[in-house]
Image 1 (cartoon, helix red, strand yellow):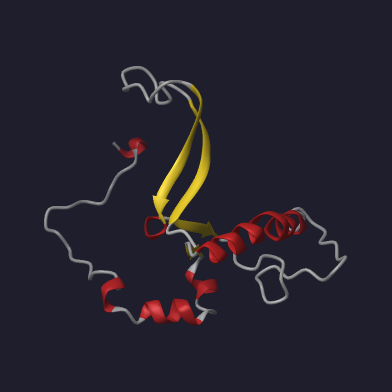
Image 2 (cartoon, rainbow, N blue to C red):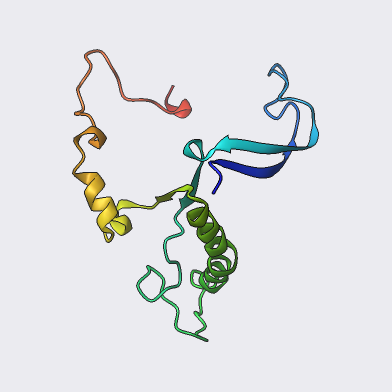
Length: 144
């Protein structure tokens, strides 16, 4: 197994995205190039994709079940995307030895022992909040 990760990259650049006076963001148009990095420098980040639609997930779906209502209609579609698009990507990353990072809200993540182990790490604890003299709370534009 190779120690490098190679993948074709295709992205669109839109010049002056932030308006007049901002520096150019590069040559506009479609750009294509090949990513070639050591696997130790590559990771796959998945944001809130934890078992969506599975029986033990936050929005479980039984086979053939229709979930009525505006809030629930997206779940079967999202579940299908997870199964047919994201699952193969995860399997390929695991097979290639690429690090995978699941990002989820702590209320859901705490169901997994890996997350609970991270909570024990003192280097990952939030620093104590200290009050700085002379600081005021931020104000909105309307308050100024």
